Length: 111
Image 1 (cartoon, rainbow, N blue to C red):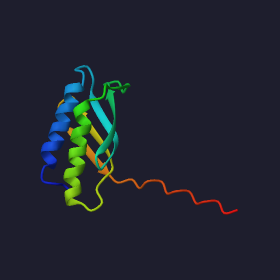
Image 2: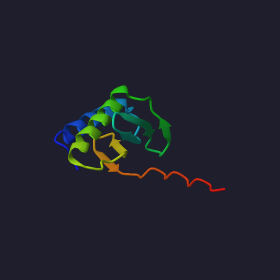
Image 3: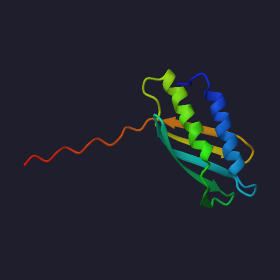
Image 4: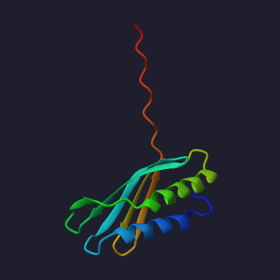
């Protein structure tokens, strides 16, 4: 669910990614995981020929992502924990928030 500040936070995240997107590249994609108080992100820059290179991390991006998670958690009892944000050179964007269950603990061996 969307919290009250969802749109503004996403807009700031898109602007941060656009600022890191070189003019000669088609899009930038951020993926990662987040939870209460922490976030991990991976950024990839994609060329018009499909080539993919890693992008330099953006410090404020993870802070914005944590804000988005906090904002969403207010409105949802079981908020998302993985995301993909794709930003095109023209500024259009797509955000996918999803919940991925952690791997269950392996059963203890009974000897």
